[in-house]
Amino acid sequence: MSTAALKPASDTSADAPAKPPPTPQKRGVRFWLIIAGLSITGLLVALEATIVSTALPSIIADLGGADSYVWVIMAYFLTMTSFQPLYGQLADIFGRRYLTILAVAIFTLGSGLCGGADNLNMMIAGRAIQGLGGSGINVLVELIICDIIPLRERGTFMGIIFGAITLGTALGPLFAGLIVEYSTWRWVFYLNLPVAGVALVVLTLFLQVKYDRKLSIGQSLKRIDYFGNALFIASCVSTLIALGWAGTVYPWSSFRILVPLILGFAGFAAFLFYEGSRFAVEPIMPLHLFKNRTSSAVFIITFFHSLASVWVLYFMPVYFQGVRMSTPARSGVQLLPTVVVMIPFGGIGGKLLEKYGKYKPIHLAAFAIMVIGYGLLTLLDENSSTAEWVIFQIVESIGFGLILAALLPALQAKLSEADSASSTATWGFIRAFGMVWGSIIPSSIFNNRFDQLAGRISDVAIREQLSGGHAYEHATKAFVSALPTANGVRDQVISVFSDSLKRTWQIGITFVGLGFLFVFMEEQVELRKDLETEYGLDEKVFKDEEKDSAATEPRGKAEK
Image 1: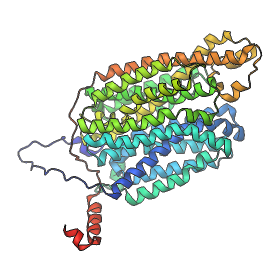
Image 2 (image 1 turned 90 degrees about the vertical axis):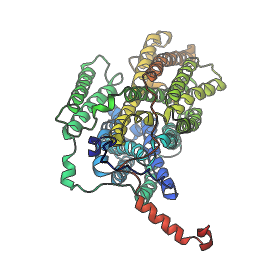
Image 3 (image 1 turned 45 degrees about the vertical axis):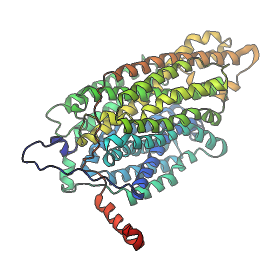
Image 4 (image 1 turned 180 degrees about the horizontal axis):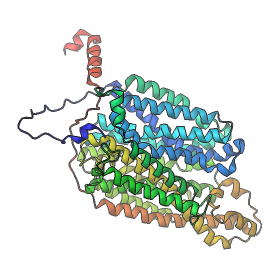
């Protein structure tokens, strides 16, 4: 948290000179190159979150270590989720520019290690490093948008950024399927290197933002909330390890799940108590972020939106592969209606927010459409037509997209600009935490429902192979197509897969419905049109560029 956060949001004393209205920043080539660089980095991190799960069987077949495969996924999410609040505080202390470049460099290093891994331990280490870089990218991309765009206009540019992030999330399985089918899994990671290299060059050259360097390195380091960060990271790791193991490695009732889960939640409670105490001089998650009903409501609906979005992105491929027997690459193509619709509606939601300044109607409409979309998904089965699964995806993705760019501006409506870093980092953590639950909860529902219906499978050996929490991992074309057709065994498995998916969508309606109800907690607040931040674009650089540009213009043109 910046020291500026300790100052009043506005000075109303008689002695305070009136501030002149801020000069609108000319948005030239440099500005748009910054937006492009941020979009590329956001896409990379989102792509990495989903691309590896599709390529994982090929990775394990090559490197071995089938008993530790879950760590290839979990190592990334552990570091990506846990370090976001720390990045928010470091951004206030050391500025945005170099920290952003460092985060992209760390992510690139991790990608190189994963691509060159010759054993599973090296792969897991590389994934943890990727997540560490991705954590910073997630926070800083959104934070820089907050720094350079007034709150009223922020939705439009958030729409651009989240369009790139959504594209990366959905294209991950498609790219992985194509890479594994036609090349080596190593290109899943090597593909990041040239793209990240371009992003590094663009950000290094053009990301010129203000940063107050009056404190020495030693003074700056003293501002870090060491205990708060350590407690938060430890709580995250404990909780996420339990969630990663639950229902796959160990049953939910196992002490190996319950102990770290309880310790994790107890740690979060202790962390919040510490952050509100006098011992936390500059807390990474100041409690005043939660003390107005609008911010609290946005944190909650962000969790539900993130959970519901990932729920669909993870389980529509299960429908395509396990029920319709599509290849991973083909299922990625079949998922495109979700992406193709979500991206433009993210932009539409952002423009509506900019034009009317009203976020609550957008949130209500989006969650209402999501409820309808989830209801339609419950109708899917092995006999559904192409038109049905395309239209159903379009409906739910309209809701997902419409709200994307209208969440963070709503969160910050009643907070000062000095809270941008802490609020963005906290919001990023909650969004990432929702993503984790969005894969864990439906997986457990799917497996449990499968166990309830497994008696419909006549082949005892296959029934036992899929029961006990193993149904989800076998819902693939490769497994289903290898099943015997004699006595209708394959059709029986497909039918149970289909009905198990129906239950996941039915319960998903409950979570989306809760999100809809929490929107009513929000208070509609007028969005600021002015930008007052100590971390905005470096005006000197932009003015120098404008002078250079004017000097190179023809004399007659310049005089007009």
